[in-house]
Amino acid sequence: MGWFKRKKDAPPETTGAPLPAPETAGVISPPPEEAAAPPEPERRGRYFSRLKERLAKTRQSFAEGFGRILSGKKMIDAAVLEQIEELLITADVGVQTATELIERLTAAKAADVEALQDALRAEILGILSRHASPAPAAATGPHVIMVVGVNGVGKTTTIGKLAARFTGEGRSVLIAAADTFRAAAVDQLAIWAERAGAGLIRHKDGSDPAAVAYDAVEAALTRKTDVVIVDTAGRLHTKVNLMEEIKKVKRSIGKRLPEAPHEVLLVLDATTGQNAVAQAQMFHQTLGVTGIALTKLDGTAKGGIVIAICQAFDIPLQYIGIGESIEDLQDFDPAHFVEALFSAA
Image 1 (cartoon, one colour):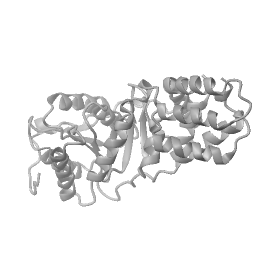
Image 2 (cartoon, one colour; image 1 turned 135 degrees about the vertical axis):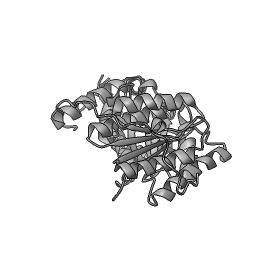
Image 3 (cartoon, helix red, strand yellow; image 1 turned 90 degrees about the vertical axis):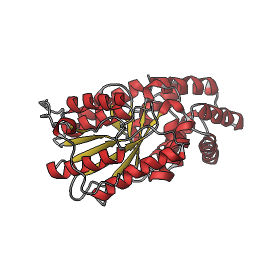
């Protein structure tokens, strides 16, 4: 597997709406006691090791494929590049992106396997590194994050992990349970809010989701909360009338806090492959997505979807999910991802 050995030098309109009753508004629990944080280099090293371990399925798929294609090859010819293109497409990089990568590799005129490796790593890193910057923090008042995505992508869990991260940083958090038609989703959020030491705004089952979002912002302003995370119902991206309901939630937030939401975070499931790209396109067209969280990367051998998404949209890939624990929701680091993808097992 010489291909994967890392070089030593590689680095509702509700104006005036009352706040929910105390028993439904939730209580902000005191945050858990924090352990001393490890030094930054140690923390980053630990996160990279975890990332590398959790990308094992994708890395193994790449390793076996490239090993098969390049075994015994001394020269890089058109037949080799064609087989690499097929491998990239199989890994969910996407036809267009794979074709463009092969065109650039052809232009690079790599003389041997090592040169081809260097060129491919550089091209992929370039794609992953050129996305736009994340949305800036709110200048005043609470920073409002509206989280969207279809059912089953890990949206509720992502919200819980974000809440835990923010409270761990010393910020107060309020979660709006605006998926009012799924009691299980609200109950799951309540568990996460308690674990994270965050507040929770919830209404009765079947209530207007926009009213929940409005009241959450109202409560955050009153309590001087730092961050508001608004959950939304899992909508099929092809159902226009359902997408309109999420637009109503967004408008409701803006009526109480004109510059909000400050972020529209789209959660996608890496295991759905190219369907995730279609979801991103529709949600972005409807809501103006500002960031993406890609979950379940540890459960797929087709991690090339990361490359496809970064190539298709000028939207920052902010987070990747590589497991069930809180620390398995990581900030996306392009260099670390490429290194983990191509490193030895």
